[in-house]
Amino acid sequence: MLYDGAIQSLEIAKREIPAKNVREKARHLGRAIAIIGELNSVLDLERGGEIARSLRRLYDYMMMELVEVNARNNEQRLDGPLRCLGVLREAWREVAAQQQPRLVGTR
Image (cartoon, rainbow, N blue to C red; front, side):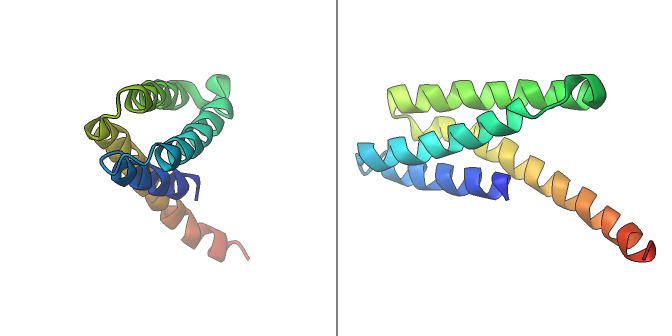
């Protein structure tokens, strides 16, 4: 759900930049930054190993891009973070789908 919220916010911000709607752009970028910041803050680098470290690098990259988008009003720079979030969302959906049969079979 967090990935969906971040993606939705970035898509709205991307529409607001060319419309020069600074207030809405900032609001939705701020929401996406908060979501990505929360995802980043809950990573357990010890137990998560290389996966957690890779996610940390991705989240850091996305945060830097969003700061640049906000400062320079360049909506094309949202493409990378949107792609990353979409790939991550689909990966977690696949993991959840693989876990579903196990959960049902344990009852």
